[in-house]
Length: 194
Image 1 (cartoon, rainbow, N blue to C red):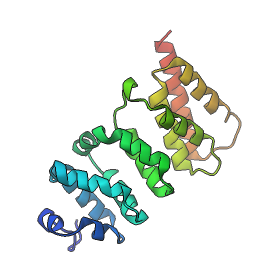
Image 2 (image 1 turned 90 degrees about the vertical axis):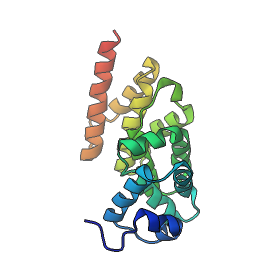
Image 3 (image 1 turned 45 degrees about the vertical axis):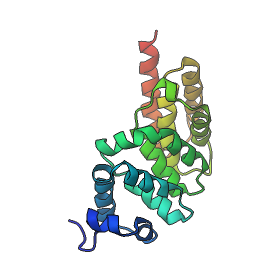
């Protein structure tokens, strides 16, 4: 159920979306805005919407990332061509919230061998072991590292080494699950490639 003050598409197009995103928004609004952005915005409007990810106001950029994290298949399709931009922003944002949301978005997008960006791969691998990083970011970095390393046996071996270095170390349930799932996926991948 949408809140009564959730704007419809015509109202949203006639108002300044940025000014709405400088304020606190709620999950119902996020879902509604995600649906509108992915399905109702034309290419120019979608491009303007996406540019708000780089806004100087952290709340605006975090809200845009939050909205995009609620996209469905249509939205993922529209974001696919912006994958490299999303990776760049993830590597440069100072907001932990925005980083977590961007990594969530990137993890939903298909990644081919040709699209692997070494700086982003290194960023993901480095953040697995960064003590100051949140559990959510570390877990997402484990999954994203696998998505990128699976094309290259030597990189997959490096990822496996990083993950096995946690043997015997107490981990949070989220990190433990991500580590376990990716180690299993690595084992399957190695079996397939023998």
